[in-house]
Image: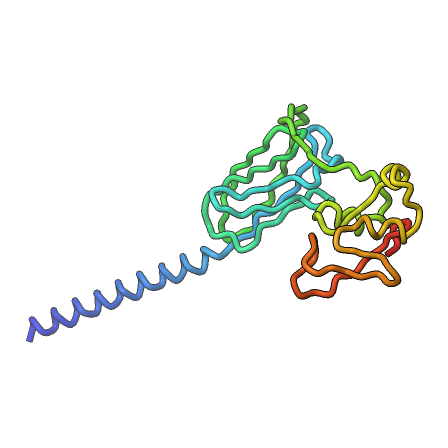
Length: 204
């Protein structure tokens, strides 16, 4: 009988310990709620001069964003822990701030030091446009090798000043009483109906 009472007491103590541990765990879970890490970036020594467009990283996570026009940034749903807020922008030294995120929101003031920086060489390649926009279609065809084109100098040298004189210069075109087209000439598609496109001041 005594042994049974002893066993009952031990069971009660085990149950009490388990309940206490559960309450502690629930308390910790309630305490460890996601936090908000926010702040504002400004020029060191002049809080009125905000730093907009700066890259803000929450390390060691991969979360990044950029400060708005007022220099503000905000990270929501931050798990409890220790983080480093890194802010960088061209023309300033990189700013770092260590924060402890818990159930309370964290506000960070980032003062950035102005620092001239030498940027690496950037090579930009482009093509100079020597013709008005209305000629774009014709010159695009020239670059693609589609069709036959004659310059003013060539027309002057050939003394070809009208279509009757110009069209016979195009391979596959014969001008008689009517204009006839030969199939499968250069630039033509087998079985297609070839035709002539004449551009005058960019208008087809």
